Length: 206
Image 1: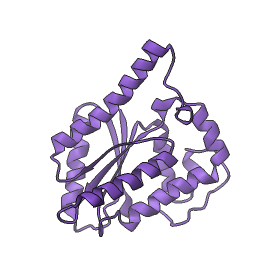
Image 2: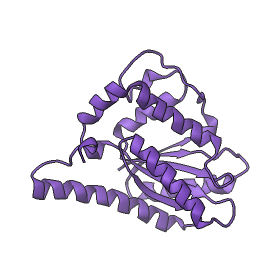
Image 3: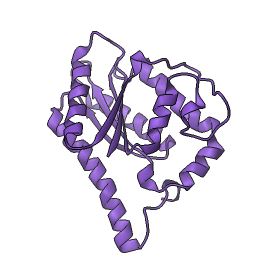
Image 4: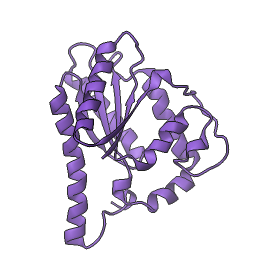
């Protein structure tokens, strides 16, 4: 499984969360999966990115800032994980800027994106996972609010929110939840092939 982790921790002093994400990455890597992690605070990402030229989605040279590296990785990604501490119960501005840029990318290339999605089956579209660090004692309403927000954003990417966990979960359980999400994808593919006689339907036809 190819996994991209986007660490949106804006605070260099919050070393605990960075170590948690590194430990999570190591757990996944030890099981034979390919992991690529980006530290967003160290990247140059504009609020409103400028495309170099009109091109198809997921092309590496589409933007002049560091978003192009992430876009390029999404071509072969099975799971995209957003990771970040919460600020006043919500994701910090750094993650919000990145998410807006991704959705802007899809909207700016809506016609090309639709053609790209129609030419790929469900396993080519990454699942979405979210890891949150609570500020203190996280109330149930904050989890629900963040889950609903991320589910809506995942839908805009023509995919689904596979899991949302908090960093108070131990690393082994966090890795297990990640594997369960991917195993469900494999089960869906095998079921369609065995009983329906074909590949998993495209997301926009489900």
